[in-house]
Image (cartoon, rainbow, N blue to C red; front, top):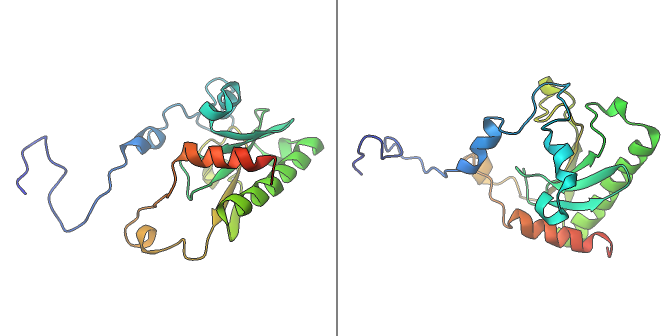
Length: 181
């Protein structure tokens, strides 16, 4: 394959590449506050609850927290439990918020098992920018469903993650099941 300057995708080298230009905005931090003490202004986790649930990819709302699809999921069904209040650290939550975060996490696990047949979960928080928090200024807990064999050759060798369902479709399935499961 001959490449003309400015038109090609690089020199052929035997590797197959899957281009994901939609991730560039995430990589470059577009719309993402920086630092552990980022302001409320411009915080995506403060903006999401202002949207309609479908537009914000919100699965459920509680009194102090909401459950939202991760826009850049590690696995299909990757959810986050997020406080409505803009706080950076778990120690900033009050007792009611901690209780609701736990209850919503349990509910999310139940729904993910019922709707998607999840075999297990990775659940956790990255506290602070140095710990890997993409949006360190606003606390959020990840709930990543797992299945036997979901770590196949694609992410290990191909450095590619395949997701079998569109985010909006997963959100619709989980939101519909939230109250009935």
